[in-house]
Image 1: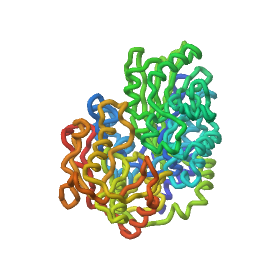
Image 2: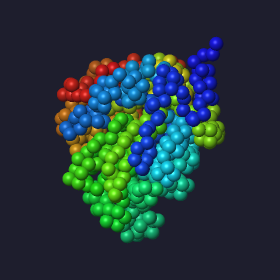
Image 3: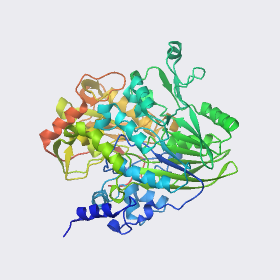
Image 4: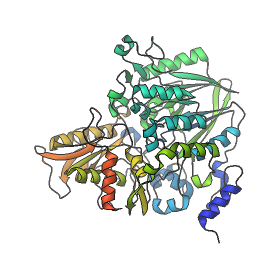
Length: 581
């Protein structure tokens, strides 16, 4: 008698179309059967963070929205998200879009994403429409986030995107490979890399730095015009506006970034006047809240295909402005979703649309053989390093959420122990995969959380006053009521200390009652030994964080998170961006 895994493998072999039969795992083929609609198809993925293979990924149970973002996607989670989008009763989509029943659901539905599975789905969706009727757009954060990406400076992902057939992309973490490497990667990319909000500094222009346009200072083409079979589409690039703030400016000293919304409006007006497009698309890495604000104030943009905040938003948001309506989407992260925007374009306008955000269940999609062969080849030189088993976990290890996740706690615990520190700090990065309970922890799992070009650790003295200032600054970045002042990422993760957080207060008043793990109050006038990593302004002196974390796991052998240093929250009772766990 064959077991469940063998049964699924037989179904893979039997599936000539690349997708499994209707009865597979109790699910239906309907998920990937999209009725034909309109005459233009835009496919969109974002924030895959170099995950070539299928992964596990738990959606957040906390994504607080305040002021204008209260109770509005993406700041609804769990049951509230299912109710908002009328998805109650669909266990498959509940697992895709929420954290609910994660430990049991993940056993049923398995891994998500994987470029070989994504490739099969992209081919199917492009083949379902007429020739030259579709575009594949990448919202960025594609070339960073894995061990192979680090070893190849992102070039593994460049070639994977070429094989996938990406037409257009913009960026963010791509810029952490340093300026020259970024340019080399873009030169090897077969598609178009666009960004209207990256300019060369005056000094760089004076020194003859190579740019797309010397008069405007654009480093890259700001937009592109694509003539499809039945439509002319303008696509404008919007890279992450705060890259030199959130990441080391020293890596890209010749370039400036910004939201540049007034310049963007001028550009949109110019494109309409000059090219007469049927639709204008903003390929954005702003983050969902910034996109929504931008859509409400700018005119002439039909669609914003968004990224950066890793939000899987099941339906397009219709945002009103003085010129009409702009559709805003966000396509999740880690290769877990593919957005499908079908447009009915007539007489130079978008008359109607159909949008689907498709979760990529790897067990339900056959892998593309060419992409899988490439993945196997590019991983082969590093497979021993990636597959080294470090220990096991009794706890589901996850990252995504406004405050501390269990994988972040593991990193913080490792930093404290390895550096003999009282307190540890770890950035609130949104990238990072999930590891279900009772799983082996490999080096690759650690790299998925830590693999970047400034991973060095530090151990230093820091006053209680400075610790509070850091927490207040990051908290304002997360909860400032003006989205244009939210610079990306979640709250800094902590080890060895607790605090109270009041998100609705103003900067300087959100953090209180800081205590060490033993309950001792943190004195603002006293110094504490603090360990951390990923310094932005200067290179830290210690070894890469993955070395310290892997050594810690080996010493523990079995990882169990007994305490999560997550704050007590004040003033957010009933917020639909918070779900009990």
